[in-house]
Amino acid sequence: MSARSGGRGVGRRAWGTAVLSAVASLAACGRGPQGTVAVLAADAAPNNHRRDAALPRSQAATWPKLPRSAEATTALLQRHSRRPAPKADPLDLAGAVLASLTQGAPGRIAGDEPIRRWLQQRLDLATQAGRELYLLFGTYHDAGGQVEAFGRLTGPGGLSKLSAVVVEQLDADGQWAGLPAQEQQGDDELLASYLARGKPAAYAALAKKQARDNYTGWKYGYLPTVMDLVVRARAAGAPLLGCDMPRGVQHQVGAKASDLLRLRELHCLLALKTATARVKPPHRIAMIWGQDHVGPRGIPRLLPPTTEVLSVYVLGHRPAAPSAETDLGRRISLADPVLIPLRQRGSHLELALLLPDARWGMQVERARERLPIGTEFEPGLVVQSQQRGSVRLLGRREAVGRAPQRLEVPPGTHAYQLEAGGRLYLGALELTAGEQLELDFDPARRQVRVLHRSAEPARPSSAQAPPSR
Image (tube, rainbow, N blue to C red; front, side):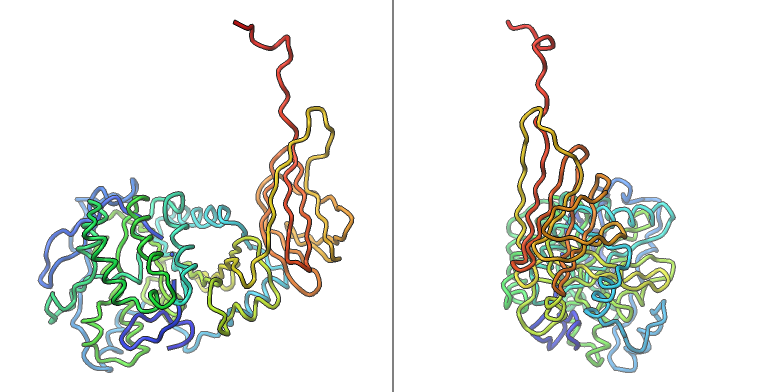
């Protein structure tokens, strides 16, 4: 398994994944020939994705026979592939990120809220066009902070009107033909019980199962973060589903390790199709997996070419072992999260999400200053740097130094990039109409001071003051 793989599979190695959430209620409805089937209840779906009783139940997935040999596994995966997969994935993540930044490529978004708004817009535009969209959040299993980022993005205040939030760290019940139901039971029943009714016993059982089965979550100390996804799901009101193939099923598959990765992805999509069979399309899915699963050879290969796919490779919050963050950390410092488009292949867009952490994060000191009434000042953006360099902003490049430099920028939130001393400093600035925003960079300390300066609001004159009582 590669360093970008997402394996919770049999014989997995102790290293890298990680975030979303939401449910009003998830109901375990009906029993198929292989056991309980998780189906989203009417009140589990957002307003524009409610369960539609008029939709035929036959839209649920037809589960094939579980392959018992390497040959049968290969043949099954070929039958379910919907897009051509490259023989190798040539994307050098660190190299692609650096190339985009140094070349000043357009499309970069910085800041939590601007990133959320951009993703929300992509979801809404796809729905308006009648297309399904899958947001694939690719993480490392040694990075609990990446799971936390997924939770913030998809929990309360995050992306809205999602058809389903799908989490790899939770198991989805299977209905593989020829296999007893008890051997392919996942977390569906416990999730339905907690999300619909908030039962403490169901939560405790899920937490106990995580402690037993999620070795990397236990090893790197982020099991509570995984359970927070479940709590946030209930608070946000978007349906939360498990995804991975239960261990009892994985042990019976006859496949090499790489094919088992792909078979786990097929299991996830079959379970998702079953659960959303009566949710009105087009579906809007947010899914968290290991990074190897969200690349062209993974989940996207099993989706129709008409489905829009956003694969987000998340970087940051990893241990100090050699990684893409190690290479990038020698050149980059972050004041805010940054989303960078990397490569487009048809309806599949690959992006990198850089999260500030102790390794490459900047120290940001924010302050507000209210000037006395009548004080004159010039609204707009003022930038200075204790080390000579240049700032990229809105497609322009401006030289900066110790002397304050006024830059023409319209009100709003904008991504910036300071280049000084061979290093790139990335972040977001938010300029409000009528205020002065001052950015003061100290590259040697990897620090930026952000000062929002505005005037005290004028008080009503005595002639306008209301009469006293």
